[in-house]
View 1 (tube, rainbow, N blue to C red):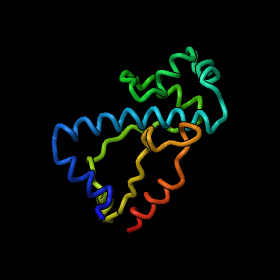
View 2: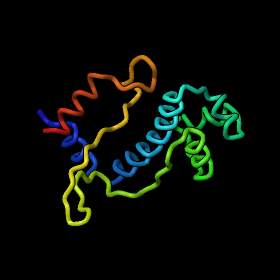
View 3: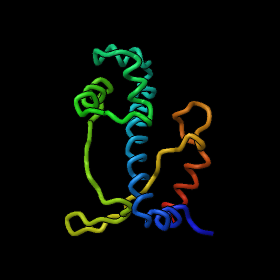
View 4: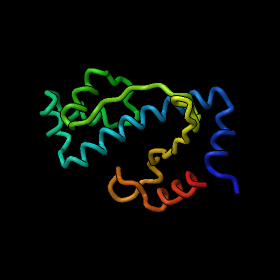
Length: 139
C-alpha cells in the first residue's frame, strides 16, 4: 500500500499541479490557524474584530481559505490580539529533511485537515486521521 506522502510526492512532479497545491496549502494554513487560535482562546469573530479595530466580516474573510489578500499588518494585529508570535518563513517544498548547523533533522509533516476530513466543529482534527498521520510520520 502506497503511503500518502509517496503519492503526493509523485503527483507534485507535475509543476503546474505543484504550484496550485502549494498556493492553496498556504491560504488554507493561514485561515485554519487564525480560526484555530481564535477558538482556542474562546473568543468570537466579533470580539477579535473589536480587539484589532475592524469588523466581524473582516475576521470571517481572514478565516476563509479562499481569501487572497492577507496583509502582514493585519496578521500582526491578529497575532498580537491572540498573544501569538507571527512567523513568516520560506522552506523548500516537499522537503522532509534539512540541515541545520551540520545536523540532519527529520521534520514531521502534519497537514491541516481538508473540509472532507473535518468532523464536529469545523476546526478540530479528526482523531482517526491524526493517528494515521502520526503512524506514517514515525514509519
